[in-house]
Amino acid sequence: MRKITSVMLILVLLSLGTVQGETWSTVLLVSPINTTQLYVVTNGFTSYKTDGHSVTFSSKWSGGSLETGAFQITANPWLTVTSSAPLSVKNLSPKEFLVTALDQVAVVLPNVDVDVQTTTEIITPTSSETPTLPETPTNTETPTEVVPTPPVVTPSIEPGIGLYDPQTLQLAIEFRLGKINRQVPAATVVQIATSVSRWANYFNLDPFLVIGLIEMESGFNPNAVSTSSAVGLMQILESNFYSYAATLGVKSDPFDVDSNVAVGCKMLSNSMVTWQRPFMALRSYLLGSTGLMNSILAGSDAADSKGTQSMNYANVVLNIRNSIYQYFNLTPPKEQYVVVLDPGHGGYNPSNGMYNMGAIGLNGIYESEVVLDISQKVADILRSNGLTVQMTRTKEKDKSNPYDLEDRIRLAESFKPNIFLSIHANSFTSSTANGVETYWRTWQSKWFATTVHNAYLKQVQLKDRGVKQDTTLFMLKGETYPSAMIEVGFITNPVDYALLSTPEGRTKAAQGIAKGILQFMGIDVKPLDR
Image (tube, rainbow, N blue to C red):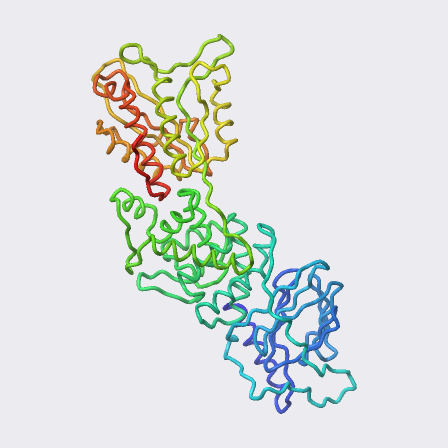
């Protein structure tokens, strides 16, 4: 916003000498937004006429000629924009216009009525009459009519295709501004739409979710500052902003629209990788991952420094997102999550014709047998709570069970997991070793490992050996989803063995693991009566 404003002020000063004493308007700014959109600002109420492929404004321009993207721009002396593609003009205000080169088969997008400000003031016509052009010393034909605004229609966008189009996002922002009855400069709306298009696409985020987050955080005000010193559109603490800005290569100015959106999208992207589900990622955006983790462990919601409860916050943002989808006649995304369970060992080695049964415990019990039974029970519970569950193996002593870890992780990732959990049992030469330990490897997995570990411990009441990072665990190397490995107890210890060797004990173990997974995803746990 600052860059456009400064350019406009300079142009205003330059143009004062040419328009003094005259009644026609002057073009202050002609700015390409992208290859198919052009932003035009004048210093007064302006009319225009179009013949489909050409638009002529009732404003003089001293810029000569310019070719950019799909547009050829000339002054004769009136500003004229031509293109080989059909052109549409959107009135952002009486002196601001958005010219769009339409694809031959494109659907005309609606003109959403919303009160907006210019960069300096709101212009209100003094009468309902259309202003006519002044007498000029030249014989140049000038426009004498205002093209009527196209009728408002409900826009239609192909799902997943046009969501990142800046014009689509501009319409979405204008729609939400109308809902909250807020006025924002038209140039700012264009900037926000362009930045959301760029960075939501870059980080593979839902752009309507980003718009909902911006509305919730700042009400589309780039200069917003909170009592907690969070700043800008996406309310980012300055202590977090600068390191992210340097990494992304954007301006070190938290009030700059593009920079703030870039950093905010990066932070939201990190939360999405860590928590997977938008509801939980939004709660994390408000509380931070540590704050959200503490909330989960406490079994209650938490609020930020301003008293905003995280669950309500996330639901409001999701409702805003859904309203935008509905505005465009689209169905909001359905939540579908895949949990991959990896019952440890059990693989068939074709080189020697033997199975990897894992550790051997008391009374000759096999680790692979124990963890497969627990994993199947976990899968049943998760499925009853609406999750899709895949397993790297479902049988004991099956030659199709992957033996090589490369094959095993390749199979797991072919399921496109949102969460991956490898379930193992421990052993030791001394029967005194006992308890539960859980491992994580990559940055996004710590909180998942912690949640599952604590829920399991609460359920089974075994010794706590801690949550630990191990960067050598091959099965936990995935970087786009959280993963962990839980050692459910020592099958060589009498206390742990008593739990893990019976159907009732394994059911109890499975309930603890399933609770942890569901709590991590913010899913209400149905009664576990299995």
